[in-house]
Length: 260
Image 1 (cartoon, rainbow, N blue to C red):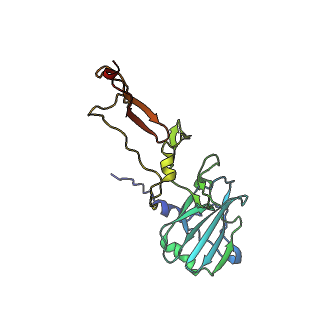
Image 2 (cartoon, rainbow, N blue to C red; image 1 turned 30 degrees about the vertical axis):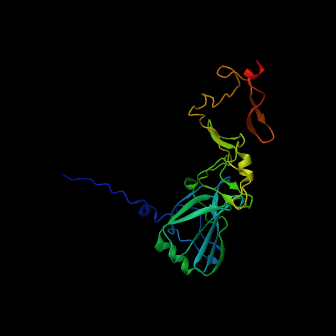
Image 3 (cartoon, rainbow, N blue to C red; image 1 turned 45 degrees about the vertical axis):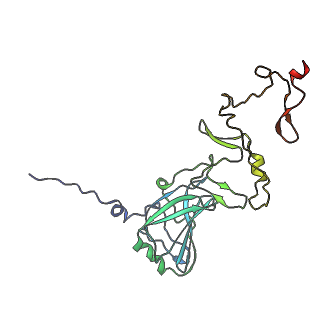
């Protein structure tokens, strides 16, 4: 009994004779007759933020131990670049935009990418001759936050953590990042703390925890008041000293027995 066997070629072997990831109409020829070999790049994924199709390799700059690939859309309004060392490179080339945000990958073979060593040093323009197929382009509309520009001009992208301090509370409100400015109850301590000062600008107060082993009530309050339930005199006076921010307890007057 004859057995029919279907052999499916590997992805890279199946595309080695095509121009993928470029369109079939791309000549891949640049200035001075320089040409990108059709099997140089095996695959690609490009997510150019705010792009207008189609997308091309516009220029390739060959320097000593450095090759820079520039990619832009049909209006040349957005550019992404990838760099590689033809003497020491892996099987992928990372792409990023002008702000350093990730923008895709070019998949290649280390042995094939070494062909850039044979290119004369210089800048080569490919115009519209190296157009990527639509299947490797991932639309990235500009309707979301993808990075932050810091006061020094640097750009932060990727995973970002928001940490609230000094009275700023950060929370997730139904998928929206919410910032609440609630204030810092210890702002005086934060403003007056100076470890290098000879005399501390702020002294941490020591609060009463118990009086004669008795703790405060459930609200944290102690009640100290004058009465004559256990003593037949009225010489105890309790009042706050606003200037020194203390509670004063004084014995004044005379005993009731001496009056009667």
